[in-house]
Length: 292
Length: 287
Image (tube, rainbow over the protein chains, first blue to last red):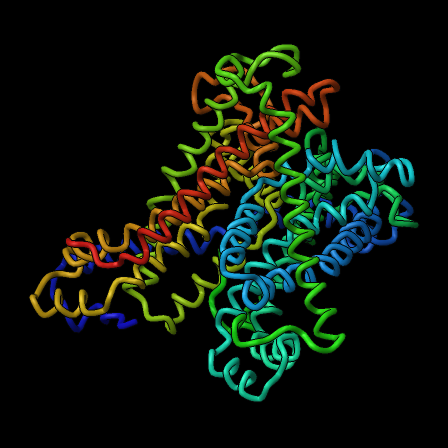
């Protein structure tokens, strides 16, 4: 895009004014992230000073009332739920996109894509509610108590599936047509074309999609809070209840005071650090813009 | 491509065919199950009285009137703050800054991160900044401002794309006519970029009314009719959360509220698709 450089083409003073006010506005927009980090750090500081970073990992348990602040069970909860859901949602999402582009008849491809877009728009609290009243009782029949790591993984899978499916869809659409014609000319069958030609060509988009869905899985709060039982423990099986970092904040923020409150902000900082790492690596892979 | 390739001939091709159709079928089935369940249980409770009456007995009976009012107030605050900032930033990024300048790259990177920040972290920030530091307390204003920070990246991205879809010849012709860049922006670029702006607006509204976690500790739980922006107000999504988790016997009304929320979002989603098809593709607007 030609960006007409502001001082060569125009001698109007209103332009100067407009440009500077726009810069001011954009600075506000850009500064929000910094503001968030600063406030998280300021609020977390008392805990970091009184408790120390190390004790968040070495304390015997999470009992804020008694001054025990072990975050590791929640960290494991977040990591297990994230890993499980990403492992299930990634193949499903990529196959969904493949279906849209290479398998579905035209008459099905468009409604199917619309359906995925609708899934992306459904609020997390609705997924959580559905999980709570439909899925948890089903899991309880297999193995009580019901609210469990498994329920969390399944509900997260449904929630992050649209993210990877839409990203994969966009990157498959960018595969150059001549690659496909070349493969067809060589007489490659459909799946061989997809595996040997399409996937390598769309690799970076697919990776970005996986990173974005991982970010969503880490940050999701309401749905997983509603279905996963919220017992602070390192889960011993998929049927054991878990509590994630995000759910912990949502559950305890209402009554937390002093060091307890600060400890919750520490877990907010941990989440923020994970997300920044993911976004930076996504930017590194795609070397393009992909916010939103 | 579908026409050029014949039926699969070896087992691997068959397996792939089955897997791909299986995945698509599974996703469709889960979607129908979810939506069907909510429509099935919710439809019988949704009525005009439900939409207008205040909740009774912690929400087990009664309606969602005040909650809808609070939700729209929160949304109003959110949009009136995020729209000017979002459009301003998008104009700057698309028209007044080159993609490679330091300022442009920094702003973009920071918006990338902002888009990924978990909603509960927005909640923590809103609670610390708007409620405590600025002294707004648990209020509709705090909630709306927190949501404004959250929808900014979405808004900016779509609006910026709207501006980038305007042909360069517009800018060059305007410059050749000696128009100031402000005039060009207001009379030429802005009208032509309206479809992108609308898509961003609608997507932002969608994200904002779906949000729960960022609002619990900023706009609060109170389910009375709000009297001012400094009152605490309960958003629809928080109402669903509260009914299903904290109120036993609230499932019927939770289903009905969920149905109302889903219908709102489906309407928003439909608007986006409609705008994307009929708006963005018809780029040239007589200005």
